[in-house]
Image 1: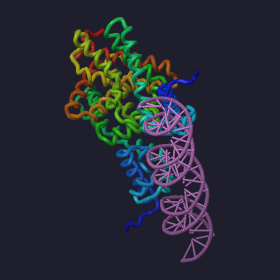
Image 2: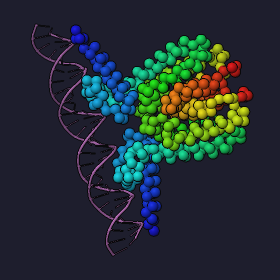
Image 3: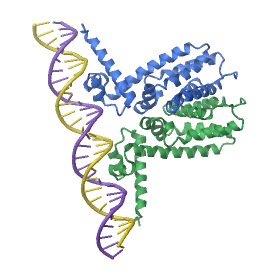
Image 4: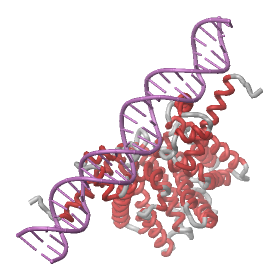
Length: 198
Length: 198
DNA sequence: GGTAATCGCATACGAAACGTATGTCAATTG
DNA sequence: CAATTGACATACGTTTCGTATGCGATTACC
């Protein structure tokens, strides 16, 4: 009985469009991704896309929200695994760097996203990653681990540093070696926030 | 005698196209900027654009190179004005933040650029700003002012932090107040690199 | 259980915008 | 002064987006 209720078909169609768009945006970029092409690849037409997402940009925004949610989950999980809260914060930044090495994330979230949707800080998905880092810094501040800094501003810059590091790595000839340099430099940079120098 | 030699007319045409494209890209973005429209605004047609720059992307790259050159000059000048080399380095970062507040730079260099041309670190213009920061860090390291860090990696992250800070400011409700928070946080962050804590 | 209404999705159409191929006229060269 | 170069304009075909319309199956209601 592949026959399911109508509601089932709808969510399946949405998921198919989301997956097809995500794939196309990640490999071709927003402008080069033809709606006719990738909807056909999903066994549908543009009609379905316009019905569910309004327009091309609407689908893109949905893809961004989906990826953003996945990233936030992964970061939270990674931070929770660290031995200390400070290490958790550092791990969040390094995790950000490593995720940005994934071509899909680099292309959609770092390259295409800002051009299509503007400043990431104003995205509807609210950029869960930055907020997670701010929360970590708030806790560290309350515990007296770090110096008295503006946690939101610092979180934004730390994530910015991570992003740039990631893009650098992604385009390097030797990503592994570059990754080591980047994570070490990141660690040094944020360790400057500690009240007691290591 | 507005009649000049042919070579004169050519450079003037190139300059007009560059200026018109720069204006259009800055206000409308790459995708929304119609070649028919902005070449007409310059008193020309798409024919001239294709002759001089190959295609739309070629013109965009020329605009980016032009802006990148201007930014590098301004940063160098600003750093040279600082009392100490360390302050010069800090000023470079803050100068980067402030420049990224200019709508033209934010739009073309930070938002549209990566989508059209890929990772900024691999742009032909080589990103003079990052290289300038690396040079400053190299000098500071040689003088023993900062701790032993990877200067290239650190320069990239510092510029990344600056960029993100700038985008945050540009989209804030109160840019002036946000700018103060951002520059203060940036200063705290990089001061962690100092050998002797302030 | 039959009929009517809903709506998920496809099809058809018009309007840009890009890139190419071709044309033209002025400036340079010998 | 004649020929050629080349800077730029014009014309055309292709692609892609967005809208308006149509169809058919499922759901709702009597």
